[in-house]
Image 1 (spheres, rainbow, N blue to C red):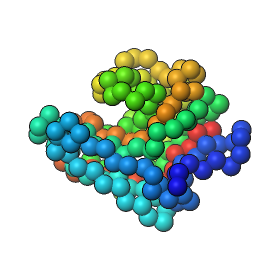
Image 2 (image 1 turned 120 degrees about the vertical axis):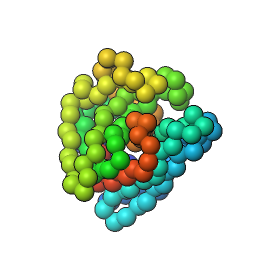
Image 3 (image 1 turned 90 degrees about the horizontal axis):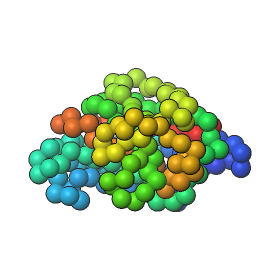
Image 4 (image 1 turned 90 degrees about the vertical axis):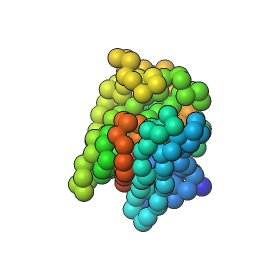
Length: 173
């Protein structure tokens, strides 16, 4: 079952983890390249929790939770809103336009909030381009918004230790 909930064409595009299962989101960690970081997804009645621990051993340093590959045309939307709470460092809400990890992706950085829920709303034009974990100085264009193939969360700030982000929803308006 896909985690995507969309009322009808022309309306908000929402990943509402309190209304849809999120079962199709999956964890990908640096173990694919020999690292020792961990990650786990937990679903509850109102949200999705992504937790784990970052290790820099064996050239590690990232853990991610990602929606399935698909077509996510975000070009009709002007704003991105996410409601979350997080501990353990900076998280990235990422939008990928290519399957290859070395190609740029587009990101909204989400700071730790402790136990407090936070709602962040930004213009889509403020979403930044990132390549190999480093901002390029460019922002997401309409063309790139139309070519998104996967959305997800990534913990890659190289902060060793435990982390957790709980997400209520992601909304494109």
